[in-house]
Every structure is written in structure tokens, then in C-alpha cells.
Length: 530
Image 1 (cartoon, rainbow, N blue to C red):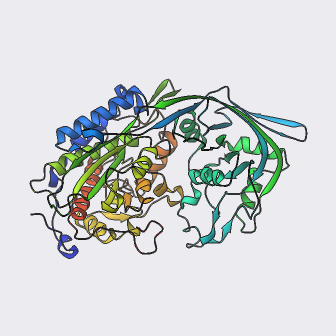
Image 2 (image 1 turned 45 degrees about the horizontal axis):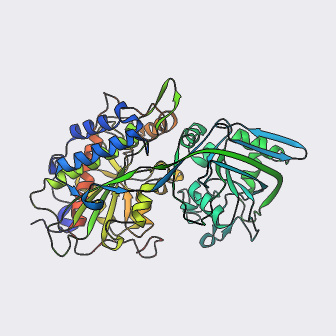
């Protein structure tokens, strides 16, 4: 019987890539199929999305994992509404007898949260800095100003500081995420929220925003009487300067003002008018869930979760003649690892004490909607969930020399995670771009929000035989040229060794956690503590 192993002993054990039978070649083939044009970019609520979930469920069944979804199936339905803003939508700003009209996609993108085909609004604009109210950091961008019914204009990200304890220093907290900005606007009764994009504050270029927000976006269906923002929007930096010029200000000037603790909201003296035309439909989409039951009657109703999102952007605006957003790295790679983990776990001659749940979630690209739904409607209670290990966009660029597990340090799993990395000859690398806020941008965050210890096993930063810093440069190139674009396609010369390593790392870590006598937790005092 597999037993929980002491850390000192674990560190001495040798390991081979074949432990668990994990294969880079199988991961390669799964990735190639999921990223193929046949899947039509795996859009949520599309034929391609249906094909992808059927394929994943079928492969999980072939692996030997049992159905863990609803009514004895491999599926958990996720009730969403698809909203796609139409090009005829308009947005304009009026002040001092002057009007500035913004062009859809070139100047602004966004969605109406009202989930109706036609939404019009007109309201005064108030600049609220970064739109943050964080008492634990003694920061308040609102200073008691009532913004009910206003259009909030703000920047994403957080005020900058050299203090490592101020908003976690260089690392982005959830206060810096665009999702928080819209949520806070809703809490304060705003009519709409407009984020002025800059590449440094967003950590990605306008092309990424435009491509991500021009497609259909999923929303959780509104209940009776629930209100929503008339517009959740981004405007380009150039459009931001045009907007602020109406009041004699600039993007740089207001960004500098937003960095100061004594900042107060600024009534811009601008009237914002919007007419948002939307295509609205109910989305037929689902999470895929399969389980390999544990061996211990006492613990088998507790689970270790392996997760990855299966969705991408489907068929969208053509770029260089290509309209299929294949999402090869993001996130056919993660799903491929998930399938290989399920096969390896099911093949164990003696199963660990706890069960393993393999969860491919929908609508990550629309704001973690599939994992958020699972968090609110779990197949296994959070109190009986030991850990979530998530995979999202792993680079197939050779043999990894390290692994990124940002967030593990917040949990009691961290010592074990460190020991397993040492056993595999992998260094633990710091997140090379903490300012991008990756911890809040992938599905593990949805599990963390309901108290489940969770983090992603991320892409390597260094690769064997490659120059120092190769991983960071690869990230920067991918982010600028291929992220959320049709060019994120499978390449025949990719080396999947790093994905095999990432899978093996998660396999060993999950197996050990599944055999612990006590459920892991967040470190005392952590915001996600159970």
C-alpha cells in the first residue's frame, strides 16, 4: 500500500520520467488534436467547444477515470449567457461643446452586463485612480465620494511602490485585476466602468485586449432583479488621451496622480454616452469531470483536484487571413497534461488514499466562469478537497530546469512541493513577471476563493541547453506575438519534455497529498485560509 512519506526520505528517492508511465509523446498528441482546426478554436457554446468536451470526456473514459459529473455523466452543465458586442455600438464623450466619438475595436471594446440586446446610457464621468478600496493597505481611491450612477474612469493595476509590504510590492494583488475594478464599480452603484489601457499597467498590449474583448463573452445568468453595469469597457491609451483632453488633462498626468495616497476622485466634467448593441444567447457549455476513486474508506470521499481550462476564443476576427484561434499553448497543453495525469493515476496498481478529480473547465477566457461555477456548485465540498493543482499554458520548448509554483508558498503544501522539485532536479523559480498578477488570472484562483489550497504548476523559466533567460524571452515573445491570437498554433518542432516534467511533478505532488493524514491548508493569516 502506498504510504505517506516523510520529506527527508522523499528527497533521497531517485525518479525517472517513466514513473507513472507519463509520456511526452502522448501529451504531444493530445495537444495536437485539441489545437487542430477541427476543434474550431474551442469556443464556448460552439460546435468546436462541444467537440472538445466530448473528446476530453472520451479520453478520460479510455484512461480508466470514472464519470464524476451530473446524472452519471462526465459533464457538469454551466448555465451562462453569451454576450457579443456588435460593431455598430457607439461610445462618445461630450464636454464644453465638444464631442469625441470612439470607434469600436480601434478605440474601445467591452460588454454590457445587462444581458439585453440594446443598452443605452448617459452619465457623468468621474476619474477614480485605480478604483481601489483596500483598508489593509490604508488605501482608498474613493475617499467617501458617492459614485452612484456615474461612469468610473480608471486604470487597471495598483499604485506603484518600492515597499514589498505595500500591495505585495512588485507582485500584483487581486486589487489590481480588471475583474476587481468592475466588481467594485458594481458594489458602489456605478452605471459603467471604463479602464484606460496602457501596456505597463495591463502587462499586455492593446491587441490582446481587442482580441479578447471583441469576441463573445460569457456571463453568469442574471437573476430576477439583479443589476449589472451598462458597460464594462476598455479604451486604448490614445483614446484615453482624447477623452482626457476634453478636460485639459493627459493619461500620464492622471496616472501620476493615481499613485499618490492623498488622491481624491476627480469630476472630469465630461458626459459619457453609450449605445451598446449586443448579440445575446444562452450558452450550452459544461465542465468535464472524471474521478479515480481512492483506496481508503476513511479518505476516499476527499479529493485532490487536477484542473485545466479547455476553452479558447473559437472563430473570430481574421488576422493575416486566419480566423481560428486554436489556443495550442493556451490551453491545449494544460488539457493534454490533465489527460495524461488521469491515465497515469488510473494505471496505479495501488491507488492513493484519497480520490483524484480531473476537471476540465469552461469559460476561463471569459473570466474564470467555469471554475467559478464549480466553486459555487462543487461536486465535492471544499472542506473535503485537499488541493487543486492547475495547468495553464505550459511551454513545449525543451527540457525544463525549473518550475514556477506561485502561490504554493501560501499553503502548508509548500515544503512537500519544494522536496519533490528537488527530487526531480528542478529549481523552484520565482514568477518572472509578478506584476502581471498570474495568480489571479487562472482557474486555481476560483478554488482559492472558496478556501481550497490551490496554485498552478507553471511554465519553466530556464531550459537545458538554452541561454540564460530563454524562458522569460520566450514568454515575452509569446505574449506579444501569439497570446490570444490565431498564431497560437501547434508547431511540429515543439519539444514536449517540459510538459512531461510538469505532469510528473504534479503527479508526485498530488499523490503525496492524497496520502497525507491531514488535509492541507493555507498558512495562518492568509486571506484564503479555510
